[in-house]
Image (cartoon, rainbow over all chains, first blue to last red; front, side, top):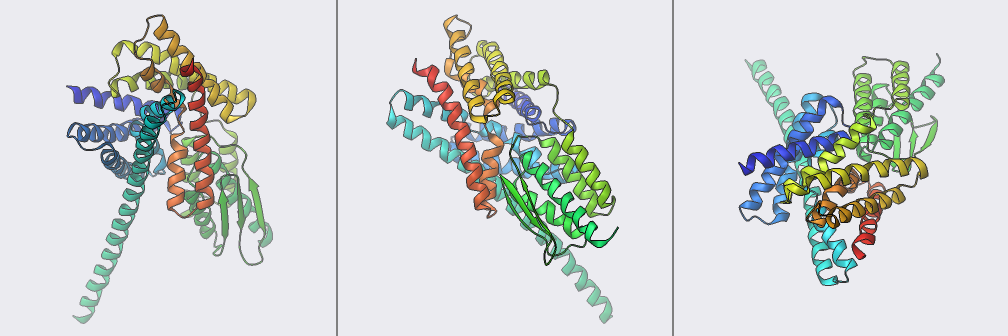
Length: 160
Length: 249
């Protein structure tokens, strides 16, 4: 039940960001879908006691893969789907706490929270980039694999 | 049309495409990729470009002309990026000519694709209140976050329109959000001030800029990456400062 509520609200949350970032109207529900998948994976991993940095990395990785699939399907730039998709993962609360600690002159907690926010945003960015690079690599391998197989078949036919 | 004019038109067309994309918040490497792809489709093989968040230099190579386009404003408008992308796709497969592409791009530059302001404001409000559910807030705080998020967002748009100073508008918007949240808690309309503020501030967060900064750095565009990183940092700092004023009192 909890999972369904999270899924539903992360969907609405991300779709609203699609509207704010002015995604094409047709793409907005899919933006919501990308965000909901990324968030639910993050949420489940946190429940399983995975650290938040690792969970953010995996969440962002999945967001980028789903975004890439939608981008190819709708022939739109990938940025449309993954920008709103990662918004639920952005450590807004931790960044707020950092700022609050610093204003209240609690520098030790401030540095701790700041480091957490920094590591999480780094993990999100790394997840996005890694997914993109790996997809490109796979696509390239598939393409060259196909062409080399075709040329192999052609050579075989010629021998016959 | 002679060759010289054809080159001039191609250069204008490519620069316009790059400029619209950069002003709408596309990644630097995508802007370069799009421009060079369009150039190749017009049989211009050795075009070179230098793209930064504040300006684009594009040369068609050898003895051809070079032009500069300066970029003064950057907003997030994914719709325009998608539109330019489809024009470049159509040009690459020779579905449209260079003249048609240029006309389409000029139309895209002039048109405002944003949804009406009240819908954007509603989206900001709903997003702010949904945030509370995702981060274990109280359901009873949702109305406060709804109001604070919407008003904060509209304040940012209005001040941005009036002053054209991005960081000032974000600072004031965060200030208003903080004020509304603390008022709500004071009058018993909300319980957790922290979560209301974080939720309501989310629509102001420079999500796109942060992502793009890192992506550009990874793609080797260090100038663009650092510049965008500075922009994201200043925005985050402005929001933080706005809230800090409220929290400190």
